[in-house]
Length: 66
Image (cartoon, rainbow, N blue to C red):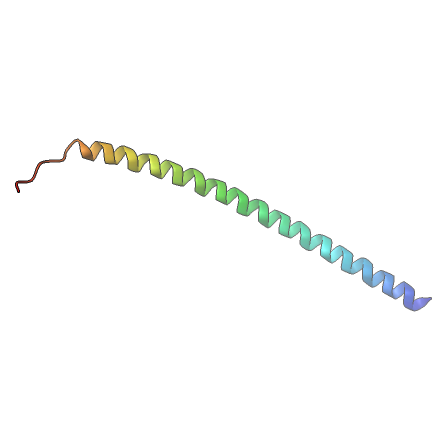
């Protein structure tokens, strides 16, 4: 009976450890997801600026003699 009790305590502790690790993984995943959304937004803004710059620079192109 004592060994069953010890095994139960051990399993409970292991379950708690797994639960804690799963919570940490969830938090890390949420942070990674947030970072990915921020990177996506920044890349979209950069693409818009690059497009505007390309249009602006295109106005100043000069013909080169052949």
